[in-house]
Amino acid sequence: MTFAYDLPEEIQVESDGPVRIVRLNRPEQLNATNHALHTAIASVFPQLDADPEARAAVITGNGRAFSAGGDFEYIDELTRDELMRQQTIVDGKRIIKGMVECRLPLVAAVNGPAIGLGCSLVALSDIVYMAESAHLADPHVLVGLVAADGAALTWPLLVSLQLAKEYALTGDRISARRAAEIGLANHVVPDDEVLDQALACAHKIAKLPRLATEDTKRVLNIHLERAVQSVMDFAFTAEYRSFSSPELRANVDRFLKRD
Image (tube, rainbow, N blue to C red):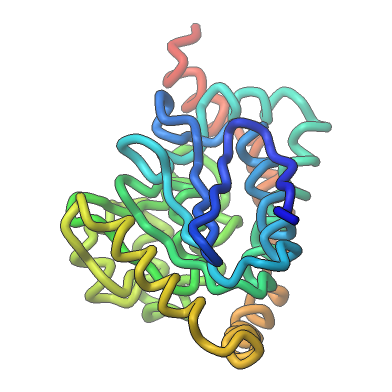
């Protein structure tokens, strides 16, 4: 019996044998996150975990981008709707917990820009393939938000603390080559090969003994889980508070060209 995923159209899951391909699906918006997509991302990892035939998963974006970060219309909604903001914080924690605890090895196929939450999904993946033209960036601070949902939590484990601070505090772009040099990506490949190579890696893992693979991932991710749990509550409390900042309000109005 095929496992039934319960997800909105903003995210797609397809089967490739024992590998699941997870596609962020707002291509016209460069897969920028709105409330539906954010909630769907929080829901997909427990469902992947529950899929009895799944052995590994590849995460990518439909269209030209992996994810262009938060949709400014969505950010505007979050500044005005406290209940939505509370749900978004809950879902942000679910995304991190879901990725860290998911039994499946998660392979990112970064087919284009991975910004904000997109960057966080990359940082929380187990193995990362980046297209040559792709880049990472976490611009939370640039718009007036605290960086809480992934990159700032995990980067200190992946790169030096100084580099984590530099990129989290400036929001600067990190090219694919630079990401590989400093430990944020495993492989940089031609743009038209990124999904194929990520799938090949996922299938290679899927052929290995299941219990050994899943428990080895768990052993490795205990380090990540402990680090994330130690800072996550403060990080999300601070991010929640920053949604009320005048700097964010001004930046959103400027982007949406409001008086």
